[in-house]
Amino acid sequence: MCEENTRLQKKANQQLRSFLDECGIKNVAGKRILEIGFKNGLFVNECKQAGMIPIGTEINQEHTDKSKAKFPDLDLRWYDGNIFPVDDNSCDYVVTFQVLEHVRSHEHIFQECIRVLKPGGLMYHVCPNFHSFYEGHSRIIWLPFLNKGTGRFYLKLLRKYKPGYESLNFTKPSKMKKVLAKYSDRIEILSMGRKEFLGSFNEKQIEKVNQKLLQMAMRAINKIPLIKNLILKTLAKLNLYYPIKVIAQKK
Image 1 (cartoon, helix red, strand yellow):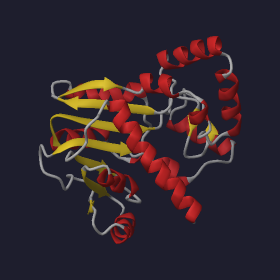
Image 2 (cartoon, one colour):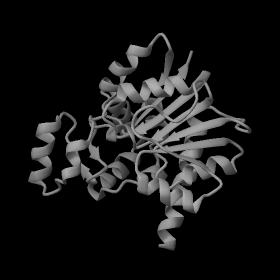
Image 3 (tube, one colour):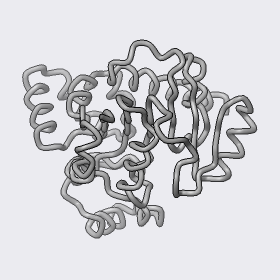
Image 4 (tube, helix red, strand yellow):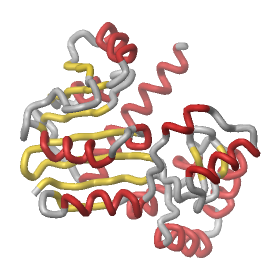
């Protein structure tokens, strides 16, 4: 249990560092940040330790109760799935990590993010790319062009199917762009994760991949710079990169 807690703590710290680096944020003192789907509360706590004023919302009552008991000084709020319990134009940043694939409506989430952000504020969403070669929930090699139905068949064929699959909202770059385009008058898309993917393909990141065959292939690619650059640029151009990272700024 102690080892697992240490792993989760390191993950939360890495999430914060990635968010700040990829958004080009230098000074966070006094900045107000909202995490949607805080689960264990560790990222919210990291934000507080960094000098920010964090808020966490969570739709799961059990996660909310456990995290509030563990971190009584944090502002952790249960969320009923409708309006975020946060004031309009009150946050400098809104973030999610592996949440968008679990929500019913991306439109609703983006609308609420825009509502609570201050003008000039940033939203940062990290989620799986179901148009890539990896499926993180089952930790298997994925086929990029599968839809929900063929994906179900594929998982059953590999004996990896679980009922939770049915609630997944397939997150793909093309789908994300289509939804975000509806708010082009209110936000500017700064990144969809291509640049971040190209910049983070290294041994340290490869070590985090929880699929042995894919990890072996990535290590082989990483050893040959010319082939590596060609493959990575091709994957990025075809939107086959992983994960999706939506970075957008409110106008």
